[in-house]
Image (cartoon, rainbow, N blue to C red):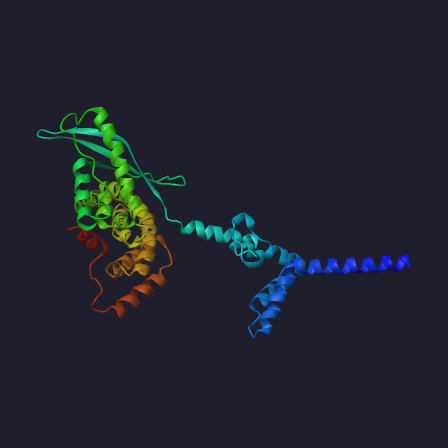
Length: 350
């Protein structure tokens, strides 16, 4: 009699344990959801998805644990404690690719430093020139291109921006000059900090940092001087101005990479005329994808023609470039520029 009672209690305990296991088993939950959806006339998408994942990967019990363990650490949980975090349904390789993609989509942040100044004395004027260094934040930046600007350049920039963005700049003022002691070391040091903060606050406003006056502040003076040198045949001096300007454009014009095309082409022309054929061809390889992608039509044929010429000199395969050049000429008959790339570059700032 006693043995019958013990056997009955043991059987009852076993049944309850199995029922508890079913209720806590994630795969049981998913199958139950699928059955309920089928009974209601809905396609069992959730159940089929997880079943197929299990069949393609590890055994069912391990796979469901991998995909369905609640991700409390990230705070991304849905009904029944099932994770909705992207990482919960990815393999290690997929997760690495996911985060690499997210990292590449992050906007590059820029820092502005004013490490030094110099005072210029002329016959009828005296002014301070501020060295501005633009640095990418978050990683080592080997291209620490710098420019020099004076107070009147900052004042011109502020006036141009106010014409279009008066509301955005309502609480942002340009550092003022003092009535006296403008050339004292203390005054210059204070203005360096003020200009550094001023540029950072301008850059923090999206519409302002994308505005042409903000972009031109960092490159226009050097580009104009470079084109004067280029027109005068001083290609070495032109390159000394163009390459730092190109580095600055690459940092500042992330939203419009096509802005770099004229500068890339100007560098290419200078390098070609300095007999740096390989460097010129490499610069053309940087410019051509931008010309194609962003439809900078007037540069396409002159750029392709010069690349074909340089490619022949280097012994590079140029059949595809020739074919593209012929195709563009046929497609844009009457609209294709007859200027050489050098003539087109010279026109840019004439």
